[in-house]
Image 1: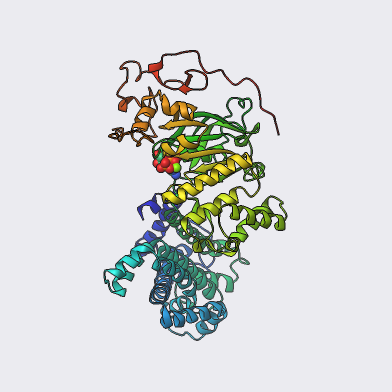
Image 2 (image 1 turned 90 degrees about the vertical axis):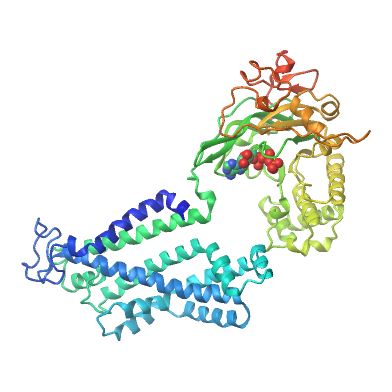
Length: 622
Ligand SMILES: Nc1ncnc2c1ncn2[C@@H]1O[C@H](COP(=O)(O)OP(=O)(O)OP(=O)(O)O)[C@@H](O)[C@H]1O
Ligand SMILES: [Mg+2]
């Protein structure tokens, strides 16, 4: 809840609401007169004695407004309370218990959803003769709880399937205890939003009813003020404040409650919390490397957080030639996924590319708007997400995934299905799985379906972010063979991200080693493996068992990389490096320099030979 209240919207809403609550609580102190005292001269203009003037009957409008706050907030609060309580009872109770109880409660909810609420309220309210506001509140709550129940029920149904609820059942907790201590806390924000929604509904409905003269019109609320103002011709007699003041007060309280709801939205969706704003386009950098299909130039990317901007990728330049397999390796959190997302312009707020260019066949994808970029994605460069098996929508069939992609890129449906069938067969998935939902596939099958989908439009490049992690070694092997086929037969370029260095050595043409958001070494796979230069690469190789020869003791790399918020003043590996040069490595960030023909390394141990030749010409424009 604290997080919800950190939101600016919620704070503003809360301040406005707090003022109204204070006014309601201190009404006897704030209001100069009794709201029913009609001893003043009628229709007086605003003055120091009557701040908002007086009514036709000679009552002080300001005093009525102040006392009306009390009556109106009471309606809002109690309607919120009753409607939410009913919604929680019916929605969560039915959703959790299931079976006949759920069927009956769900049917009841549906009936209340289709009953036209307003006429029912009007008819019932017309029979109320008591002075109390309670009947009106009860009627409004009774006609307004069903929406909340519906939402809460579906959320409960989904929570019921979650592992922690199953675990609670397994250890023998009673249904009541599970609902109270496991389900309810997970739905607090939803329940709070429901309460606020019902309170707004209550205030507006009550004001509407009272405005047309239903309920007890002698009670002092903003609704009854509007009723009297309207029936006694306030506007005709020039007493417009008589209508404006309660009207504005209703609007203001409604807005404040709505703003509080925004805060709750931010609580349920943490992505909204960091104050997601439209980020400027990254500052372009460099020119595309000659002969490269994908040329990343000085990509700097990170995340905007409440604690300030973080830099996860610190100026990475990489190139992939047509038909080439580039492996990117590095420990968890070094920025591999961020780089891949940044390269295709797929980072979403709070993620942002601060600087750099990503030239795909000469076109800087980062200089385009999302709409301009869309045709290139999937058709020219596709992406296999980390844990991409979750990228399949569970409610649509594989066939529809194929058709959706085809439709978005103008591929005739029949041809798309034909291609998909052939690709699935290539990946050893029988064609009838086209009609399967993702939950009917095993993890390895989902991964292969995603690979097949990534090839549907015959892209020139596929970025694969850890496509084999979390799969067993046999399936990993199968997928790697299929990736080799993609590379060999289709000539597609592949950027393959993993922290499994030994896997890369086997299959890559070139390997780039990432550390703390930078590329620290890059070169032909065999050379990097045989002659690693950077102490980090050497450490990385020592942490994996050798592919041949005797068994060796494996060594990890002690220590941690620098934080993403830190500005680097020296080599990012300095603190962990056993070969560091004090006074050198901590003083300047090493540049990525050539060591031999195609091998580059960012390390002060290798002196400062002539820099890598700068890119010289612009690649072929599309
Ligand atoms: N939305 C976010 N907000 C703040 N920081 C983030 C966000 N997403 C990622 N990060 C941080 O950015 C850094 C790089 O993350 P990234 O996912 O690129 O790492 P990775 O190299 O792909 O790791 P892994 O091998 O575990 O997938 C990490 O330190 C991570 O905590
Ligand atoms: Mg990752």
